[in-house]
Structures are given as C-alpha cells and as structure tokens.
Length: 338
Image (tube, rainbow, N blue to C red; front, side):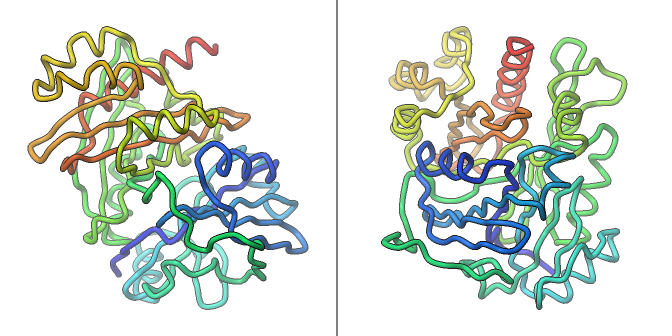
C-alpha cells in the first residue's frame, strides 16, 4: 500500500490559456500534449520529472466556483494500486470516480488522488485522448527538476487527523513537525513522507484560539483545505531566480534585517550573503547541509496557489527558521494587499 512518486498534479483553471502561459512563459515548462473532451479541455506540461495537467471547462466549474484556480488532483504511483485503494477507503477516503483501472480517492478538501501503477509514472494521464504538440520535445529539460514537496493548508485542529490519514492510507509516515508563533497568531505543521522519499506533504494549519492570519485567510478564499503551494526543486537557485524573474515571475520580499544577521546564523555562507540578499533567497541549515528557498506571489485570481523554488545542498529538512520567514513574508504580503 506504499506510494512512491507523484506522477502528475492537475490544476483546474478558469482560463486554461492564461494558466498554461504562466507555466510555459514564466516557469519554463513545455506543453507536450493537449486533450479536448465534451466537458473539459486539458493541456499537459512537462519539465524534467514534473508533469502538470491544466484543465478548464464545464466539467470542472463546480470545483472552480467553490475553490477558485487550484490543484484538484495529485496522482500517486503505488506498488499495489488495489491495496492502496483499500487502505485509503479503510482510512476514511471516498472512491471519488473510477478512471478505467485507476481509482480516484478523496484526499483533503476538494483535492483527490489518482492511484497509478509504478510503471506509469511518466505515462499520459489515463482516460483522455491526448494529441502530442507538434514539434515539442516529449522530455523537455529546464531549471526545475522535480516536485520537492506539496504544502497543504488544513483547518485548525485537523492536523493530526490528516497526518494519521496519510500514514494509514498511503504509508506516509510523520517526518517532522514545527510550531510557529507570530504575535497573536500561530501555525502548526507536520511533514509526512513516503518511504521512497519522493512524495512529501507539508501539512499546515492555524492554531485554534489564536488570532486569524494568513492560513485562515487562505481557508476562507479557498472555501476549505487545499494546496497552498508546490515546491519545485532546482539545482542552483540564484541563477534560477534571476532567470524566472526575467521571465516575469514575482517573488515575495524578505526584509534586509534577515540578511543582516544571516552570516551569524549560517556562518559558513558569508561570501554568498550579498547574492542571496539580491535574489531574496532564504537560507537555513540542518545536520546534513544547507537549504535555500524562495517563494512566488500567487498568479491566481483568489490569491490561493503559489510556488516555491528550493535547492538542497545536502539538507533533508525544511528549515525551521525559513518556515517562520515564509510565514512572516506571506503575512506581510497579505497585510499590504489588504
């Protein structure tokens, strides 16, 4: 019943052309195939190991009306699809819809999981008549290598329930946890990870009884739990940020005070502080190495889904100082927008 990889994520978007343009022009993806069905239209985008399906049309309007643009399905490859389906149902999931031999089970909020055999990690999503894009490379490369993790925003008080669900349903054990307090606000997080290390979800939730903040605002805009951001692994983050910024990507800002003390907090990176400051990249370290991160602003109408670029120089964690820095950055952005 173990899951091994994220085969693809599917984004429902009101304007398919605009969403595809964002991923292609700004983040360097390539559209490799297209599919038109009676009730929806989809485009398949690839970059190295990452597959993103962008879908719009009447068949997804109910999701869009409730949640706005966002990730609707995270497809997972499994060592045994039937056993994983049964474990998910026993853990409380609902069989959402059959897609030929690939069951689709409920996850959190409006997000589902399509379960696929291991051999179909790079296969085209099932049940659609895909037409290859003329002249497009079917294995396009780029700066983004893979999905490092998926950040999921849940309702306050439900964190343990979903951590247990992902363990019981998909064999994803708890890996770490973090508590962040900012003024009267507070956030809890639990990281769950597959044995393969290839499927990682960071579950975050506001702490009940604390002042409302960015997670409460997300839950309100999204009408419940949903994917807050996708974290994309890159090989060298500073030139990647420059390239994506030149393409039009907008990143969250970090105050100068963060970099004023960075050389003291991460003492073996003093020569890079100026570059990190210019790129607005966050840095942390654990016992294995360094972690470098930067976060985009949301391009969605409801300001829901955004993205992260992450580089791991040996680090296996998520940077406790950076979790706080991200929370503070998103909170500043929310207050400025408000």
